[in-house]
Amino acid sequence: MADTIADTRRLFSKPQNLNDAYGPPSNFLEIDVSNPETIGVGRTRYTTYEVRLKTNLPIFKLKESSVRRRYSDFEWLRAELERESKVVVPPLPGKALFRQLPFRGDDGIFDDSFVEERRQSLEHFLNKVAGHPLAQNERCLHMFLQDESLDKTYTPSKIRQA
Image (cartoon, rainbow, N blue to C red; front, side, top):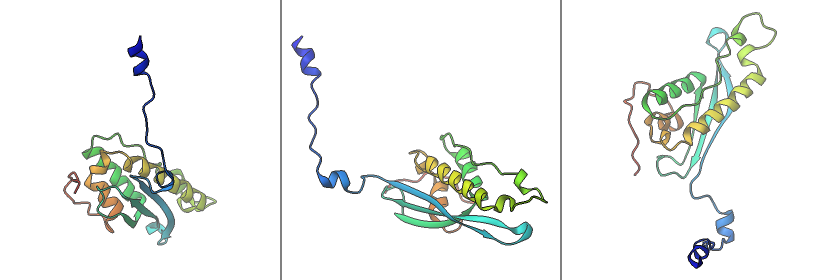
């Protein structure tokens, strides 16, 4: 009986100081999708989003980066992750085909409320994907987050930690 009581005692932990409580977290990964910009006119019109990354994870070569991506780039990333990784990739927000019909009373897919809704959904998608430890090893994710232009003819591979 005495052995049972001894085994259920609390573990002694180190007291937390102010630096531990309010200092920078040991590992962090922040991704923001912001500043949507609509470019072009007519049928060549599209929206780009700024994708900003801040991290201290050693797997990423840059600790801060900012790139512009359009919806089709997010589709490319999702397809590459599905094809190359063992990660269950969440869905992207839909293509909004109804909003692309002519003779609508609004701007369709370029309407401010739609662009904002899509921005939030893309940010949620990206944070979910990039937060997965297996996805963090995929070269396509690193290219998407940190390379100014996407090389869609790249050779898929894993990133090795330095």
